[in-house]
Every structure is written in C-alpha cells, then in structure tokens.
Length: 151
Image (cartoon, rainbow, N blue to C red; front, top):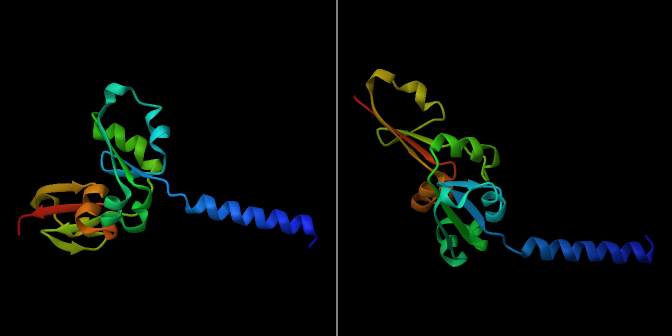
C-alpha cells in the first residue's frame, strides 16, 4: 500500500470514529421510536398538529434507555388520530421489535392472540414502546399488548 492510500485510510478511520462517537437523539412520536431526526419528521407537519414537544436530557434518557439514550430523547405528541400516525410511523420505526403480549397479566408467546377466545375478551390495552421502556426498560422496546379476558 502506498503512502497516500495509508494516509487516506487513517483519515477515513479517524473521521468514522468521530462520527460514530457523536450521539444523536432518538425521536419518539406519540410513544413510538422513529428512525428520523426531529427536523426530518416535523417538516411534513403543520404546527397545529403538534400538541407538545420536549427534550429529555441524555443523563435522564440513559436511565431507562441505556446506551440508546446517550444522545437524549425528543418526545413529540401529536393530535392526529392513531391510524394516521401509525401509517406514517410504522415504516420508519427505530426498533423492529414485536410487542410483548400479556393475557390477564401473564406473559404469553408471540401467538398469544390465538390463545384467547375473542368472545371472552373484556379489554385490550396497547402500551406504546416509549411507555413500556420507561416502566420496564429496553427489554420492552416493542411495546406491550395487554389482553384481559374472562376466565
């Protein structure tokens, strides 16, 4: 390898390490972590669509998100219907994890829905990933579905 290639290789590695070490905040929209920056997400929204937007500092975000919180966390709350938000957010989810399913507060497998007779269901509660992570840590990054059924 000639000297010029060695210099370029060293520069590339150095720049890569610096870029990697700069922590970028994660963005959560209506409780769902997305793979866009705050600015990228907000460019397609009217100001009237946003109810609230705030930043959780890295030291606080690390408490419940571990290393993922090193850049902090932007939380954006919209007034749009869940159906509209899910249509926009689902393709750009940051974490591709399935929700954990619980039936009458007992963990169920990924096919937990099949174990319940629909006629016996009292209620279904969907816990978005942000709330699940804040309460249970990163192991619940896909969120949770709680099904309560008559026994």
